[in-house]
Image (cartoon, rainbow, N blue to C red; front, side):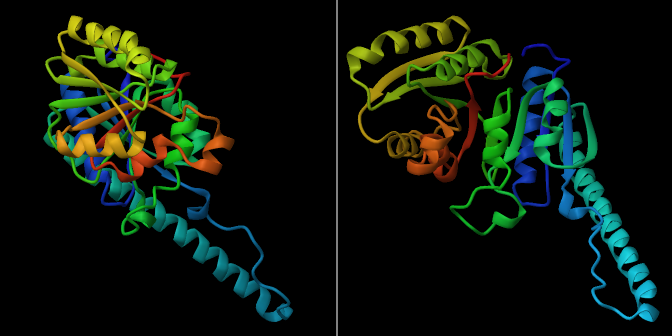
Length: 291
């Protein structure tokens, strides 16, 4: 993960969150020396349609109409590609202003289909909290977000609507493998060197949490990070959200989707709730994350 040949892969679209994605990517690149790769993916709906829309048309009109429909599909695809390149040009301009190396690619297909290729050279993936269709739906997350987080083997940074300088980081620790991976990542990454970090456990007995909190605090302090820890009681999503606001943390770091997908579909999850309601960016780790 500390290999600077690994890229910061930033997924951008036409939403208002893309500027924040670019600014977070620039911040991370500046602190790690890693280059940024901007990606815009054209989905299947933006490709030419192959369906026969002519219906029961008389033979004399059928050929002309089919040619017109094919031309319309081709024009729609060209416009989508041109729009994608324009989005990448705007994103590249934001990153270039920060003076960090940046490349940009326009890809075709489903985002999950191209994910393995993107992850191969990625140290982290970045995606906005909400996509184009969700800009004005306050509680609605981007359609690709959960799919990416659940499928990715790299850390995923879900960016808030606006970037703000990152000085204080809150790490949610539940004693699980993904939380331990998150602590190790923060300790190992130059991105967090010199910052302040607070490790918190919510809803666990203090005796049970003491060992893993002391271990996390010592690991972070040994890496040059000003660290502290605490145990709080209550419902995790509510307590963490309140703590982020009241103590003015700039980023939340946590494990992702500790429960099975079936369980979270029925009762929700702390991960989804924190992404939905938290006003700062959230860095997520799964148990299968690769360093």
